[in-house]
Image 1 (cartoon, rainbow, N blue to C red):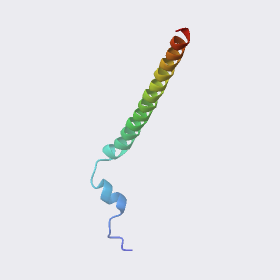
Image 2: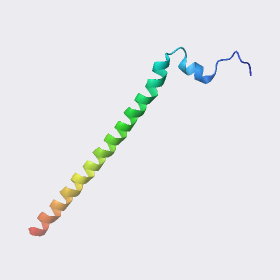
Image 3: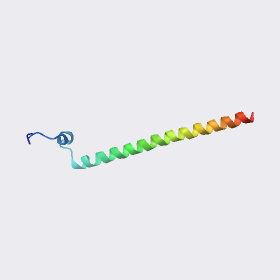
Image 4: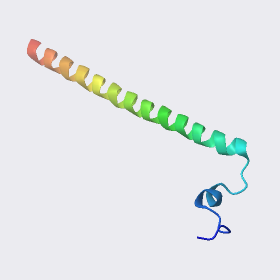
Length: 64
């Protein structure tokens, strides 16, 4: 392998400033974590509401 060929990392980064190279991955990780937590919270909230609605339906039906 010739040393004159640029590595894959050099091709991806190019001449980007070091500040950008360090900040972008952390920002992407934070966005990903917030997205996953938000999605899981939304799904858990939906489950809780559906469970409560089912309990209320059952209770109303039993009283009728």
